[in-house]
Image (cartoon, rainbow, N blue to C red; front, side):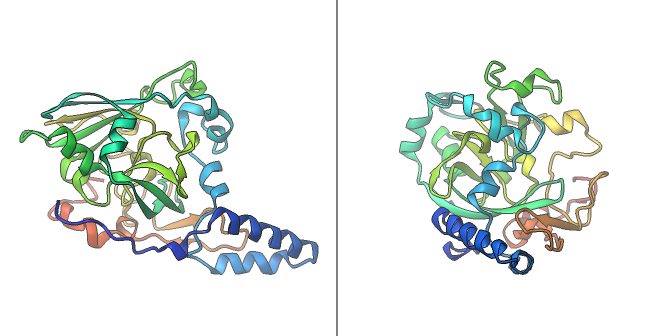
Amino acid sequence: MAYRWTNDLTHADVTPRGAFLNRRQIMAGMAGLGLSTMAGRAQADDALEPNSWEDVTSYNNYYEFGTGKGDPADNAHVLTTSPWSVTIDGLVDRPGEYDFKDILSEMTIEERIYRFRCVEAWSMVVPWNGFELSDLLAMAGVQDGAKYVAFETLYRPEEMPGTAYRVLDWPYREGLRLDEAMNPLTLMATGIFGKDLPNQNGAPLRLVVPWKYGFKSIKAIVRITLTDEEPPTSWNMSNGREYGFYSNVNPEVSHPRWSQATERRIGGGLFAKRQPTLMFNGYQDEVAAMYEGMDLRKSF
């Protein structure tokens, strides 16, 4: 392994749940004194203030539980996440169905505080817990011919009410190039804020690729396949004109329905200004070399 990634956002950027609740009490008191406008401006000015537990767990895209932002928090509690296993197959030395607990026993769990950017032009900062995908792939043994990694989400209609609607071709699928998968930033998340991953955030295991739009970070993973061909991905299959395979955060390439030049920070309040979006979501130094020589307007 070339190196382990180091956070540029620190613990000081994270709002512990207790501190967040205390802040809410202070805000409520200020509102009672007619100072809520001032407080809103103060929040907006603090552009690097991390998102709260409430923001991270209540504003989600997870169409298996509904298309509304609040639907996953309302509906995902019925999902059974234990026992859980992940099938790893394709071009690997040790294919098989791996018990989630056995995987965890072999991995080093770290905290990674990443910017999170949705293609809908909103963003958050999320403190994840998890392990590097490269470590999991090394455990399975990647064979020489592998070029891509395909991922698949659980498909359990009796517990996933959103799958009754053909919004997408279920199960949800995603993919990465092998070098993207092996990048030290690419994380398999098992928790947030030091706690187990809530169901609405993709429990018990999800992908996090911080330089790509959020829909690449597939949730509730049950299959990982190493392949020599670019795998089909759900949003690309649904609308290839709007959703490319790479889906890197790029302020210079707008989605047909959402400009990507700026973003709205969730939790910023009524007076928060939109902020400029950073190339590769701010991780350019770590990932840009993987795309040298590519036309990122065509390979979007």
